[in-house]
Image 1: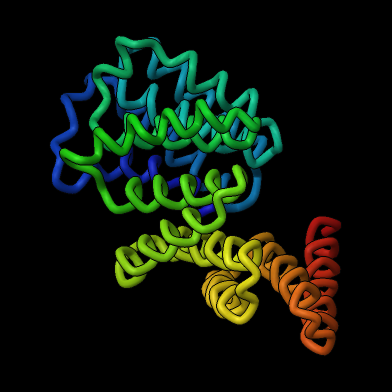
Image 2 (image 1 turned 90 degrees about the vertical axis):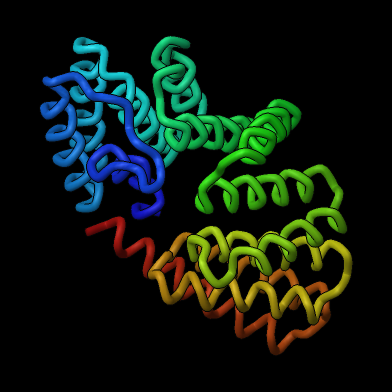
Length: 270
């Protein structure tokens, strides 16, 4: 979660491969410094300090009319708000970025902002709006779109199709995206695709294939050390085993899930 949340910040700090960033104001270094400090706090798990630093960076970027800084800091602040469970506030942060600043963003930052907005709309159960954002973004990506954006579009759209009861379409889209991105896509998103595919196959009653997809998601999430995602994978595997009436597997997954939940509870108490 932490790694994915700071991908756009990395763009601010290091530049975007294949696309020349528009000229930054001479005083933009202070924005970059605040971004680096915020990123360090974020990786240490100090979200309040990270939010303060990103907020200071956003204020400074707006003061000197550094559009790229405004975009990146807004995205990272929105991500922190979402992680804190406030997707409505996160969406408001993105919506306050002016049309002028958006027009001066490099394509990747603008696409990242649109993808995050779609995710937030999905969180808020505004699925039609989320799908509309994704369709517009997919049309933009027909010209140029980085892998991180393309895989995010497919992952979220597959999830939205599943939530709308279109399990077969969801499974097809997830499987196609896995085949397209498995060897070179963001592993976190590949795991998300496997999880959506598994849940869609579970909804379709294909329990063996669902278990295989969910086990693939679990293997990736374990390798990346993602306890929240591991719990999601195990929850789906528990449901799949129960639906398949495989009680030994159900008991095994349930025991592993309880172990993960206890470990997460201990970590939050430290």
